[in-house]
Image (cartoon, rainbow, N blue to C red; front, side, top):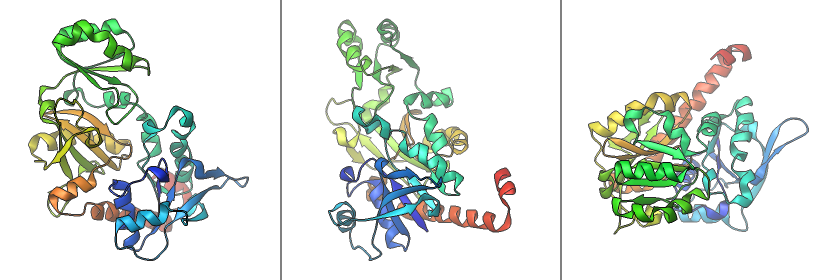
Length: 347
């Protein structure tokens, strides 16, 4: 199959990234692999969407390091392709990491992916679903029983009131990722709360959330695929992220460390509760961040950590992901052979 991976920038891709692992696995299993970035699209005068893509040469690569070096180096091969010729377009960018000078890039993947769908390309995750999830307000659309009590506001008085009510709260930006400007406000911090609020509120709306005490032990990242917990050879694609020292953030790149996850009834119940909406929104690959019996976050943009799960479970979770995409291509091919355009629209 022909598969393209859409990323923020080739300069920021790393060997350990889930995207690199997926692309490397796809290429070494005889798929035609391309990379796209926000700068690469064009809607031509003939109404065809084309792109200046990086093409991965057909030779096999022994390591992810050599694979990534080939496509990010000065000799990387570029081809102008028609998006409609792809079987799969996998959106693996994170709009929240784009700087303000590149605000135009935040929506580029979603906009052009919508056109790709009209050309018969399978796009994951679905750009219409991702459009709803451009900020953390999307999280509030899931059942209340799996969410911490949450206030979203720009009124510092309301945030202070919530802090007084719950004692300990977390505040963070409505938009953003990676643990930037995330603060825990404890009861003893309330007299000096203004400085922390000001640091978050300057970037827009603030999420003020009850603090889950079980977060002291870190959280669990569990991957879902097609709404179901991702499993391969009896192992769940999951791992734990444990805080280091007093840092509130358990993100690996923010100082946390990794540990093996134990997936039990609680985690599976949470997954089942959120499954219907994720399926409805076309979220193919998702990462749930779980603390106790609550969700801290639902990651639908470029969820990472498959390599961390692999390191503990000793199985390659890229295999079932690529197999699922291959099945989608086969199903689409079947429908095209057996139904006309109007019947396809109903399907």
